[in-house]
Length: 195
Image (cartoon, rainbow, N blue to C red; front, side, top):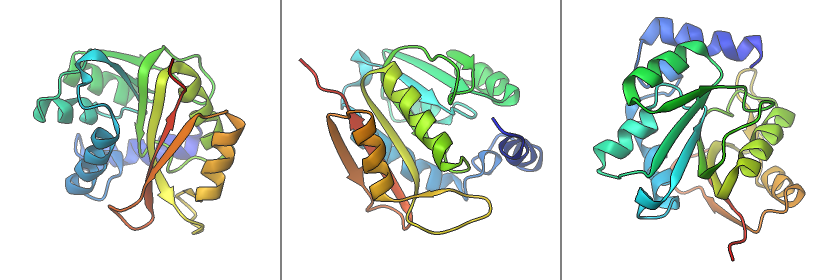
């Protein structure tokens, strides 16, 4: 994780604590809506699947699945910040791994998900992040990113064409887009071919 990203998250934790704003979401409601979309794109019965949460933050996605009575076969959180690692380990009681998703080797899981963790990465880092998660999943990688061609000093926006180019480079079998829940936000599913 570059020093900008590290400071971006550490300052939010110091200012807002263990809240949605503490991981730089505008509000708990916007975080939950993104989680709902991720859940919609995952299989209905999660009890048969392991889920790896890339950039898990405080483990909020796992806690949200529990609140929604969605039993997971296994949850693995991955984050590059020691603060996130410690907090999510304590809050979830699940296996949390301290790793740089862009360059470290990742554990195998049925599905990888990512909510918001790529929003401050450069485009080449987004590509590496997606590539590593997609390589480590058995069935699919579901992620949300800021969508469009807006320019920002802080955030990275990704176009549909850029996502399609990454999918093509990774030989993704099927790509599903969902952009009907927020302006300038998209959730994408990259699926592998299944026998």
